[in-house]
Amino acid sequence: MTTGRPGRRTLSGHALARLLGEWEATGGAAYEALAERIRVLLIDGRIPAQTWLPAERDLAEVLGRSRTTVISAYRLLRESGYLTSTRGAGSMATLPSAAGAAPTLADGGLVDFGKATPPMWPGLPDIYRDVAGSLSAEGMGSGLDLIGREALRVLIAARYEEQGLPTRPSQIMVTLGAQHAIALCARSLLTRGDRVVVESPTYPHASEALRDAGGGRLIAVGVTEAGWDVPGFEAALENARPALAYLMPDFHNPTGASMDGATREAVARAAAGAGTLLLIDETTRDLGIDSPAQHPPLAAAAPVDALTVTVGSLGKTVWGGLRLGWIRADEQVVSRLATTRASSDLGTPAVEQLVATELLPRLPEVIADRVEQLRTRRDLLGSLLPEAFPEWRVPMPAGGLSFWVGLGTPMSSALSLAARARDLLLTAGPRFGIDGAYERNVRIPFTAGPDELRSGVALLQDAWRSLPRMAEPVSPAAPVV
Ligand SMILES: Cc1ncc(COP(=O)(O)O)c(C=O)c1O
Image (tube, rainbow, N blue to C red; front, side, top):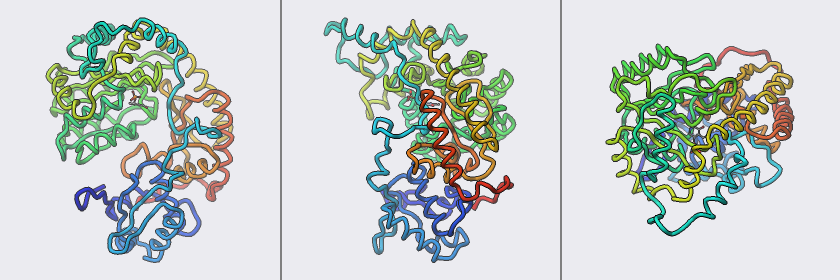
């Protein structure tokens, strides 16, 4: 993605071709397949709305297709409200109002396999009531602050200490969830053009935040359910000397993988050697289903603690709606983050912090409930999926929130569109990759309730059967254009 004229987001022909990946695999006329792929890129956010697409001639050249194919694809997109063209200015991708407002379960009739968001921990309303009941104007000050209330920071620091990572309360900043923490770190700690390592697949909103903040080039290092590409990580750090590496060491989203001891040592050593800051996302750390996280937080393995920033959250254990997370970092980094933070938000609200202060001592109980719930749901989905899709590869995750499924064929975007037509929200695999990878994978969360999981799988089966090339044998990877 480039910005041509100031304030104008423009995609070059090459950039769009990378995002398109294996777009022809969906069958049918080429112009329809092209339009369909651009539509799915827009719907799932890989092409932000209001992005100017390349001129027809440029795209045709890069794709090795006739201009008529691209002109016809753009016409289809215009007719369905996904493109507006202005003579002399070009063609801008848009979302028709119904598609733009991503529908949610609250709208009714939809099954949501798009988000990995567990329901509220049932004890939370009582805690809110208790906090509201004892709320008093005394000692509340302005009700928001950039660093966080002392009592809460003491509890968060103590939790790290218990897990084998000595931490002072002054090393903690309370944030509005982990996403806020990641975006704040990206904005404060990166300089435009810095190189950044991310896992592949990765959590898309983190890679977006890193890219938006100036991670000029994202460098991908592979993760599968079997683990991290450690030599790839070491080589990336040695050759590219990235400013920052964003990692999810425990129950990685979307694969559910966790780093073993040797990987932790190697990653920490490589980062210290290259002077690369490790941005460690532990949002999913407490979601061990088969067993709890086996190692202390990754920062404990780092030879230089100041070269780590760790992010945590109550979003997956307690509830995403609580909007409460934190950053653990060197004191100097915390004060730098506090300085940058004020320009985008004025601090974490006091009531959420009071609720979190009540919650933290009860976290073992909360985690036990959550893990039990996730175990039932994972096991259910883990038996439904292989039954419904014997041709898929469905590795059983040891924790986390989702299955990372291998489809055996590059149909993930097509599947996500076909699912959407059946009121099933599903995020296509390439959303978790960089520049079009993972068309052969799809993430299926097990956070929904049992009935929803069952009806979602039935809709998914119907969507899968509707795809034109389903019956074909598994083909080797086609070249990415
Ligand atoms: C790995 C990871 N990091 C961060 C977040 C954002 O969490 P929060 O709700 O605390 O902002 C998520 C949410 O899905 C996540 O999966």
